Image (cartoon, rainbow over all chains, first blue to last red; front, side, top):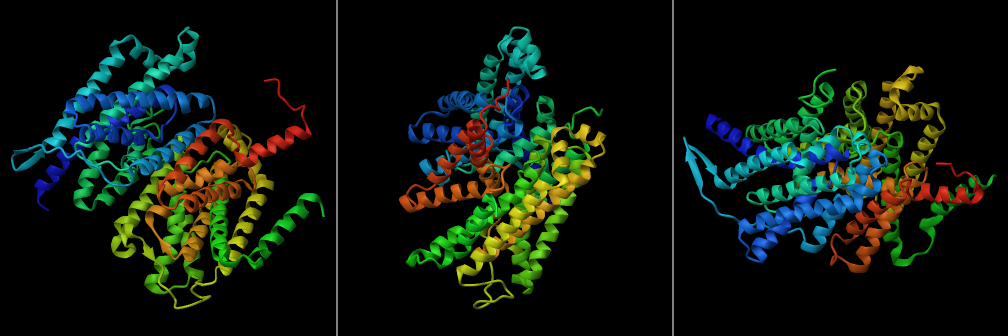
Length: 287
Length: 330
């Protein structure tokens, strides 16, 4: 095989990794604070992608208006999920929490099928490519990558340098202590869900550049996103960031060398094996 | 005979006699729905064998797919009878369960992590079936080659009554196994492990062995259910028999019905089947996805308000009426 294909695949892997990292960080932020895995997280992305699609194709809004609007839609979805589903079961068994968000996944997938049928819908942005040394870099991948890096920087600054960001980090370190300090964890939960939802909205916009949306879109990226989070260590933001690129590289290179499905198979098998060797994630220190 | 035993005997007699009740043109349809309920309730029971002890697998589609595909592929490519192909599929599923379970339990992958690892395994099986499209026809699915008429050797029958009795028998066998586990020492040991692994190990319970045992049993029964389903439907598809979708469907039917009760999986499966069939009859294909939408909402509502499921909730209600002074001070 021509090595140029491998280089191209590796670059595409990095570009995809940026968007995956946005997804993984959003899910991981929620997990770190609430200790709940939102199985339906990528289905919220699907919903936001429909919102973006209808804003751009249905109402003819500019991408620059529709993008931030999708972010808001995502944040509202995040708050709604928290208030309607998560907060009543905050203290039940972890497995019930997992299953409740799983029920949401079913609901979102089938409700989307009901409303919009199973047609694939695409925003169809036509952007040029740049050629560097015989490798074509499509702008539909470069721009989302750049935006996702900026968004992650913004998230970092938000968590580090704002009051509520500090509170979010405090809760994820120790919920009970936070309540004992007289702070109200409920507010932190809602803000976290909103930020996590906004990340989903952002990922939806970025994914709309390259993918068409359909009700089962969540199945395409959902399992991958959980695995990235677990691989990086649930709640560990830096780990999730690194793991996104590891997984997307495996999928991209495996996809070129064997087939798309085999790329995913290899990635999942790597995930399973790493779970046995390092259950706390790739960046966890051994006890 | 005591009350519950008499009731059970009467219920079984009614189920055995059901195909002979005159139903006119509805017979085939009623039998078809009943067969599906029995098979999926059996698979649900197999899942709840381990699920009730906190070993919540989100990847039982892996075992289902392995069982179904092995049987169908062996028959289609080598004309190997399902009487041997089925056990081969079950054997392969057991192997998968061992390869997955041993390291999981040895390295203490529990809770969320166990759920997500099993989820990955379910996806791996689905993707492998799709990737090997030369042999499995990929996501198009595979139709069981006909033996040309009724054949005991090929386990193909035109008369649905044969499958009805087979499914009924298999379901009852599943209940019997569930009951045996419920009454055994293994239940006490596994419950202790579910509560606190370290404490269980400290009183001499061999944690890995017990967990592995129940996982293997659950995987074997699930694979058997998959093989039976494939023989009945005569068509297998990677998306309906493996991967995250079907894995979650199994879990949800059981949780809805009640995973700590003998009849929970049946109640859950019957309810979800009735819901989807009822909506299909009422609205046809006009409201595609409506059944699952209601189903999803029901699930969320149930998990919030009735986490023990319908059977568990009903039992608590009956128990409260009989003995109203059991309220704990908390």
